[in-house]
Length: 476
Image (cartoon, rainbow, N blue to C red; front, side, top):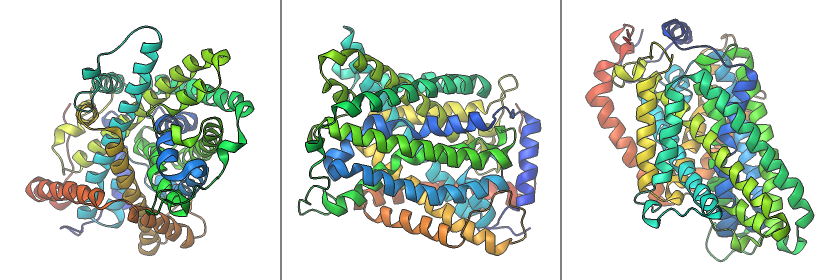
């Protein structure tokens, strides 16, 4: 087998790895419903409960609905590409694993390194939003958390919820899935309640002008604002790719993963657009630059519906909790996959003998996210997470084309339709959205990649099992 920076894993070896990992302890306990709930649980969270108001107030106005449509179309193209890979290579690691099979080790490492940051940033962003809703809810019932415990330098509630969700995941995937399914049900119920109650209170004048005039600065309202808004709101869709990180714990991954990917995207998009239209119809978009825009929307309904405020906040708290839960799970499985290949210390690939989880990878994933959530503001975290996600989605779209060319006879239980057009459109839309991000975001990514290269050349390259031609033996 070819070794070196561009060494690739064969699909056969990846499938064998999945089989070995299952025999070593990862439990196949997830059906198509569980996988879809994982996707919805991750997708529907900060996008509705936190970022909707900020994007509408700063970039799009009422046209945020169009930004959601653009982001959904991009994710639809990419989701079809993910579905093909998930059916071919049902193994933990998501984009990292797919890049290993198509682009080679150095590219797989860099993508995996970016994914670790992306998911940690996503957890941190959502946790800061969770902190805002929890603080507001506690204040409503007479409990006030001191301001110094809520600052960007030391956000204690955000760190607490990450620690709690990490504990759930460390003690078992089956238990965690049950918690997630319950949370998703509560979250969907609250969102639907807000939509159906809010429709009656929409003021059409709040929708006008639907596309506010550009201020003279690119990306601030107008058509460019819609495009910039689609990039900023892209964060709302990151979760669907997290489904693929749980492939080795799916009962029938070849069949169920593509269904779960597409179903979670469709359901989430419909809800996103509905909530956005209702929200900007109830409250002038200029008033929505807050961490809890849905709560602001409920307040605008009047004192007669004050009970709904409590329900919505509880739903937001539950919904954001599920996002944190599933995203830490996805991040820990990427840690596991990279460590299994020898590119990170083997301790991260250890499976707990009782809980059947990669417990060390889970704990470290939670710790990193907790530090980020405690130290950085939500706008910085969310923007960089969206940028990293767009890069990963760009790579996935290109990888489908590469694998179709290099291994045309490979058995594909699910095939991306209209190749090469769908992958090209996926790569194009993601690439164009990346271009609208400020220079600082690009510099932050390059700095992270530089750190990753140092780690790879100082540790990963010489410990790579693919280059050594041997298999990792993990001891519990």
